[in-house]
Amino acid sequence: MDKFAITGGTVLEGEIPAGGSKNSALPALAAALLTAEPVTLRRIPRVRDIRTMQRLLVDIGCKVEAEGETVRLETPAIACPEAPYELVKTMRASSLVLGPLVARCGRARVSLPGGCAIGARPINLHIFGLEQLGARIEQSHGYIEAQAPEGLRGAPVHFDRITVTGTEDLMMAAVLAKGETVLRNAAREPEVADLACLLVAMGAEIEGAGTSTIRIQGVERLHGAVHEIIPDRIETGTFLIAGAITGGDVTVTGCAPEHLGALVSKLQQAGVDVTQPGAGSLRVRGGGRLRSVDMTTEEYPGFATDLQAQYMALMTQAGGIALIVETIFENRFMHAQELARMGANIRWDGKQAIVAGPRELTGAGVIASDLRASASLVLAALAARGETVIDRVYHIDRGYEKIETKLARVGARIRRVE
Ligand code: EPZ
Figure 1 (cartoon, rainbow, N blue to C red):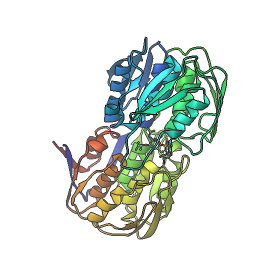
Figure 2 (tube, helix red, strand yellow; figure 1 turned 60 degrees about the horizontal axis):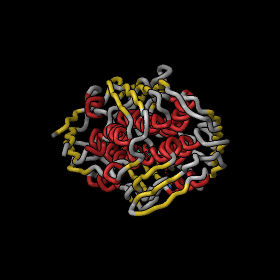
Figure 3 (cartoon, helix red, strand yellow; figure 1 turned 45 degrees about the vertical axis):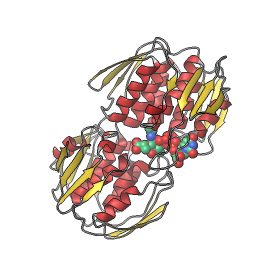
Figure 4 (tube, rainbow, N blue to C red; figure 1 turned 90 degrees about the vertical axis):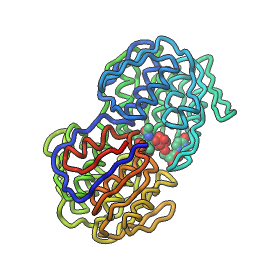
């Protein structure tokens, strides 16, 4: 099991290129199931979750050819409309094949995702939406079986709560349904809008993606397309915080600044100098005294829950008290325990954490628990005195492509220990 050994105290300086968005690539890969024609996706990050999704698609009957960051997918027929537990338990986003499979071949057998470190994360809203579109769904032996032999028919779907992959799953189910589907209380994340952009390029009729109400007119069939995935806003935010926490000067290039408004605003309130040197880049210059600033996670365009752990690491170095409220998941403070072991002064319960600083962090042996928590530990280690060894970095490999190479390029003393 790989580990990271990080010696803190260096000031990061230089440019880091942003990769393609993992959370946009995953639904885009699933969307290729909706047509028999080839779909070519560019800027696909080479991370573990993408490899898992590609393996699932191959088992379903899709031909996948990956060359660098370009992936060509062709699904002449659905051989096996299933997402088995062995795969789903390693990646919950496998549920994104549910909508495309029911739309393409009228049935799907998808394992219910098991528990997850950060919360229960059920898919009841995905199931509810498909039932609204006429699918018959049964649950047994840990699987859901969806049937729609006569095809799906468009319908209004009002989500009880905002769900990113639920919105994406239903959008993909609706594009081949008969008639109009209106998704209300839909997720507004940029990844939803990016998926809609791909589907429209494939011949779908979608309006309102990126807003709370999305209208989809079903069409007979979709055709192939070529699409470039948007930059990863969470990776970008993670590197901006790396620059801030080390008091450095870091520019992330090839990113989408417009997707990071909430984080940029918080960093500026905290006393970090954030500028936009060019259309696709963001620059942070730290070094001044950091101020503690409260933060509450919210659905987009609010502060992303996927950046909460990284922000908490930064607040351990800020002068004062910061209240961090996590409203999206019920158990997303596991990094707090590890940060406390490094010397951070944090108190927390299920929903709220109070971070008092500044507190000098010292290197320690720590364990990664989930993807973004492990990113938070890397950031803390960069600011800590001495060496930190982070175990179970396979978590971080799920969503960050060669993070140690990108950070080392701007001066971090980080190495992977096989
Ligand atoms: C997506 O997960 C992201 N993953 C997550 O990123 C991200 O944290 C999350 O959205 C919130 O922004 C991908 O896009 C692949 P949700 P998703 O459905 O869609 C509850 C990362 O680090 N809910 O928006 O699974 C759910 O339990 C990952 O890259 C239901 O109750 O999240 C949660 O509390 C982690 N029933 C809330 O809604 C449902 O049917 C938001 O979940 C669906 C969700």
